[in-house]
Image (tube, rainbow, N blue to C red):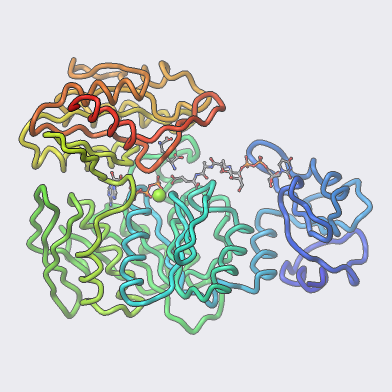
Length: 489
Ligand SMILES: CC(=O)N[C@H]1[C@@H](OP(=O)(O)OP(=O)(O)OC[C@H]2O[C@@H](n3ccc(=O)[nH]c3=O)[C@H](O)[C@@H]2O)O[C@H](CO)[C@@H](O)[C@@H]1O[C@H](C)C(=O)N[C@@H](C)C(=O)N[C@H](CCC(=O)O)C(=O)O
Ligand SMILES: Nc1ncnc2c1ncn2[C@@H]1O[C@H](COP(=O)(O)OP(=O)(O)OP(=O)(O)O)[C@@H](O)[C@H]1O
Ligand SMILES: N[C@H](CCC[C@H](N)C(=O)O)C(=O)O
Ligand SMILES: [Mg+2]
């Protein structure tokens, strides 16, 4: 594509040299990956300033550079006020505005994003759609799976991925939209068709200065809905009416709103809810239909996820009976309330609860049906919101007969210091500290008797543990399985 053509999308910029004849063969924001003919965009990051790598990009063959200031290079420099916004605009243009041709359902909220996107995948596949998915666990294009570094990748990776999805004839994409992504502008220019809000509770206060700022970031998904293009397709905001923040989010959007809830009189509701050790039953009530649902998913929070997915699917025209079939067939997502069963007489569950609210939800669900004792093995991630640590520990001791506090991904922090933050203010003696996660899991399994349940929380699907710059193999499910076999053999 001609550089003069692609830069038309920027509207306001200065250039240091003529760009009329320059041909661009790719976009790149990492100097290490620049190929001959690329347009290199300098991004000011949290760690380094991409402007420092302009000369490296030139040496590797970049045809031109987009920057926020003049640079000491001999190739043309396009100067803009904000390169992070520019890269989103340029990537969108370069990949031919792919989200305009896709049905894109974005899911935001503190907990439940991954769960809702997988429910949506099950529903749309039941209706024979060709689907893509982008989120915490992986990116999927139909059956093909790809690793991702972020829950919501940067705008260049995103637009390129949407383009590749269209090449594979995918029609609908479900994506988790993190508050970081909204705040940084990774999804700027994405033409969402449905925006879903799950819930808001404390997390990420290392990044956001307050809960108000966290809510503001989440609300951007709804504020941006339908504003991007002059599209013919209707847009919908799907909002959890039982969450106290619903009003604020409803006010953020100019598009039609569909609410869901259990306790409040929402558009999409679950009535006659019954929860037990086998899952959930309820009546799924829409504005004009009612249908009974028998799901294998556990806990009230799973009903919220099913309602969110149902509302978004209805907005896309999926019939209710198809939704029912998919919901009833779903057994859950990797690392979310995932049982580890190797013939032992007690339960072991691995779950990704890493916030105070999710831990409370999962433990209260277990408490509601357990016949014996509850053990929980849990730690908190390093280099993340420190203020959630004592709250997570408080949730643990509130519901468990014994909590074993351990390491999660300590990252650059001292594991002991993280655990010390967790136990600040804990008054009960119903806990132990076993810093080594494997030892902690072995200990909980060793203690468990018939009818007891061990919850191993925080790492879910993760297959690694990040300690002081090293990424070591670690999978809670495999370690638990080994510990159980060791005990019962
Ligand atoms: C704090 C944060 O969001 N950081 C993200 C950011 O990294 P960064 O700002 O540190 O990047 P940087 O290293 O300073 O580099 C700046 C620029 O210089 C370039 N560079 C750098 C080095 C070089 O030699 N040459 C070069 O050109 C880089 O390619 C980049 O363009 O940009 C990277 C590329 O897009 C992201 O992968 C990275 O996410 C990191 C890994 C991260 O952990 N982010 C977390 C906080 C996050 O975003 N989490 C949310 C989910 C939260 C949830 O669970 O809800 C998410 O969506 O993942
Ligand atoms: N609707 C919900 N409300 C509260 N807790 C939930 C809900 N859905 C799932 N959870 C709990 O939160 C954990 C994480 O769920 P999930 O991975 O779906 O959330 P997420 O929003 O994608 O998280 P992340 O921000 O890490 O990507 C689950 O393992 C479960 O314990
Ligand atoms: N996306 C979340 C995941 C947390 C998972 C937990 N295991 C941890 O490492 O803190 C984050 O990066 O904050
Ligand atoms: Mg997720």
